[in-house]
Amino acid sequence: MSKKPYSLLLIEDDRIDQIAFRKAVEVKKLDFEYDIVGSAEEAKAMSGKKDYDVIITDYLLGDGTAFDVLQYFRDTPIIITTGAGNEEIAVKAMQQGIKDYLIKDMENNYLKMLPITIKNAIARHENEKQLRLLSQAIMSIGDSVYITDEENKVIFTNKAFTDTYGYALEEILGQPVSILCACSSNCFDDVPELEDNMGRNETIHLKKDGSKFPVLASLSSVKDENGSFIGNVWVVRDITEIKEAQSKLQMYATTDMLTGVLNRRAGLLVLEKQLQMCKRNNLKLTTCYIDINGLKYVNDMYGHQEGDEFILIITNILKETIREADSLCRLGGDEFLLVFPECGVVDASIIWNRIQQSLEEYNQKQIKRYDVSISGGFSEYEPSKNISVEELISIADSEMYKNKKIHYQKAES
Figure 1 (cartoon, rainbow, N blue to C red):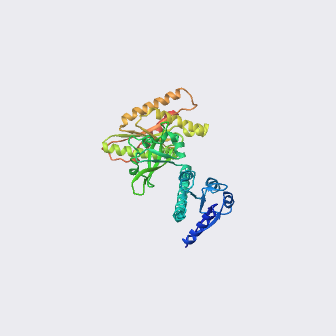
Figure 2: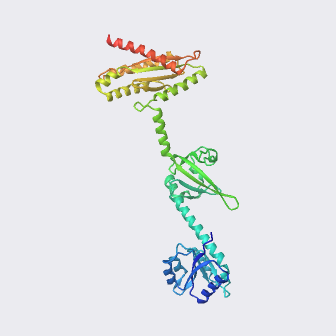
Figure 3: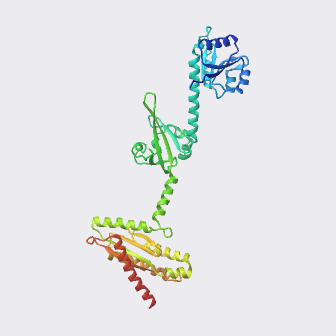
């Protein structure tokens, strides 16, 4: 595929210089498609008719200057030509957006530099265009982006960074990146070692107000053309909402929604772990299988909303009475399981008596039109006996039904 010739516009009010340009293109067989105009006004008219790869304009025109031309061709690289001694003007022009300049001479030798000057001006314009696009993209993305130099000081941030961390640009530039780290060690040194499968590190950062928040951070090293390190580009995502969602999912997976205690699955896992620990350390463990007395009656007589309140009353009394090390889970419906680690049945019975006393005190207040009571049965793990979780629960369940039968017999007598 042949390379497309450069399309250029020459703005030159000197006829001799126009002829010299045409001759240089013809003699050197330059692959240019060009138009020539003699004034800023004519150039303005051409700006609406055709797109050019590059504009070459004399600095001083009969009806204006190269700065006027710049207004008409903002998105096109412009090269100015000027006479010797006007280098200051050329530098000023480049500061305003002109891409390059050529100094005219009497022999028109400056035209020999035309091909390479055009090539460089177009390349510089494209690089600047790409840089603007990159900068706009970085500034518009939702993740925080910041760049640090060889001394780990911040030299650039995007808008998302200032919005997330609370720093104004002038407050963070030049600051050591370590002020963003909430870890005891420098979390920025640990990033390559603690990566997820996408090359990101989960850690804790600090906002300007001192508040901590979880992030996923990744970095890319920046090197010069010689391969020497010159800085790091950091991309950081605030994962506060993700973590909160994960916590909720974890809670839903392990918690009984009505009572807030462990659900059946989580409670059995806790019992399994506690039993394994007691086996390893030659310790006792006691379980208590609990059933709420009269829940069906309350549901039938007063409705399920009252039944739920009945369950919550029992739950709160159990939670307030057991030890911190003990576990309570709702197996389902009116059934609960208490786990007493490092505790024999004698000591567990003492706690059970305190629970019964709390229930009696509650009933004495006559808050409800029914008695709030529970039946329970114990099973004890002894290191000398090899017993499973299922066997422990089964024994406690059987004991509970014995006690429940006694409870109803007393109620009927």
